[in-house]
Image (tube, rainbow, N blue to C red; front, side, top):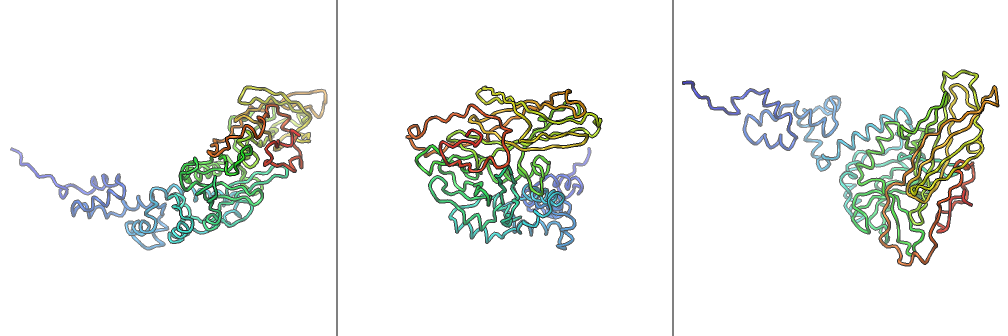
Length: 451
């Protein structure tokens, strides 16, 4: 009869045990160290803690060499300082590293505006000052970088159209605390960004109050039809700080938001919004402007940037000039408007092989979405009688999610007649200076193109 052998941890070889331990998180690894002396020895194996240091703290061999510590001690040191953020730190640290690496290549001067992270004590002091707890992921990000210096251009994106300019800084924690809101309609809201030119800020709700959800991020939008000044609608930009910041960084580092003149421009380009006719390609990107929009009255303002490019391989004799444009504009109600006009924003660009012409224009509408499509009409330079059309791809403009104020006056219907902006005029008629004098605070105000 075969002799039976008692199976115990002490009899098992190390390699399979280490393999099993490598699948455990640090909490389970620490728990195993108390099970037996053998597991206590194995859980101190350096490669196990190297993986955890890389996973949770983004540490490298260079970091280890610089600190002169074993991986396990290095993990413990970081956990003692940043342990409360262990579920958020790696995601936000990666986002910051990706953003800095990208900007270092594309826009290095913006890196110089970043501030070093703050301490736990400083964050605790801010919480005591404003009387509200800061979301953990927000605190975590500010341990890495304390926003930026108040400079132009801002880290959180820019937008320029005629004489309208917006560039948002990511506020440091002290400046943000100074702008903490306690007024009715904006209670317990902390500004995240600020624009010098427009006064625009994105806010984060620190409490679930006045119809807001804790941690969600939004642009405030005063209800222009309500009698109560605390009636403030909101364009929602993110459900929490992590998703708001990481989605923005992803748009930057993937090139979705272009770098133009050392600034991040928040144009969104749908890769399907490209059309090629012969040697000419037309592509479109769009952006929503919350500072020029309102929910009440429904007035949604978009800018779009169009790129017209003639292939480098085109024959020289194919050089041409743009004569006119045609737009077919369809809103969410299915109403269609057709518009024709000469040139684009007052220009008649000449296209030659390799030439690129870009321009920006804008449009407003009263429904929550709209799409545009159409064509440009060109003539050949060598023969003006040779006329042809170049397709403009269909591009959609959709208002971001918004939430209406809970404190709207019950007498809104008596304040103003229904707002009607169904009929649009030509969006490409904007030229330099035409937006001067826009006042969105006027309840009956319209985009200058309607005047």
